[in-house]
Image (cartoon, rainbow, N blue to C red):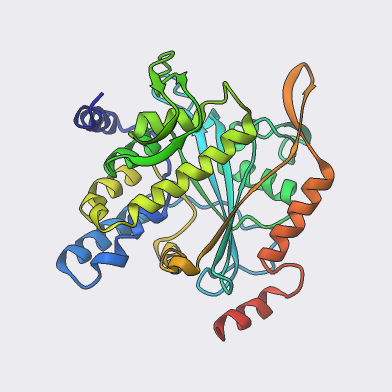
Length: 340
């Protein structure tokens, strides 16, 4: 299917007023880096601000914070939630999460740590007071229950969330003209309409459109949930890399429209702008991919991924240190970051 046809299909979906979810929030905001001070820049800025404001949906503040964080000065965390939904499935609020990536941001170090959480991870869900797959948390209560579950799992505050479904992902990648990704092996995968083997990719570095990138992000036929999490991180980074190029500037109106049709987040526009400093750090920005470790198993008759408790504890400590929760208080961290 051509990009032009995909765009027409996308517009048709928008007219149906499908449920708005989220895409990678930095993409529409990176326009500020290249068009500031121009009339076009003012137009895009206002368009992005209106889009984010219309997509705002709050959740309860983290019980692991004594005070509300300020991303301008504090180390913060964001949970990216990919929802397993489509028009054909029409799960709405009962949709399960298909991808979970936690990002922690260290203001002083200008560093980001990304943690992929396998969808079949066997975890405690506080809302239900039971252990089950973490993918079920969203179906039990949307972003709030998902955030609460991840906080309990990693023992750190989750300050913000960003939620997206399949269409948000496809629309953004297509608006960028595709992304360059190294496909690890040849495979066939269903498309966003659940048509079996509709996507066929061969191994190697190549430019993928939205449907192809989604298929790569979803498949796990030849490896596992762990490798899928790694691929999702690589795809996420490829999107950001493409969005920051000069040639992508003309695509920003389409990107903003795609995001606006798909977003729910508890980040305000002013809070999002605080993260632009990370995007402009260039070679000074450090980004590290982390992974939960464990083994395959079965619980209550279903396949689950049982996390290694010792490795989980190590990861918890890494994230706490990155957020400055082990050595300094929030107020001390703020003062230290202000002096940088």
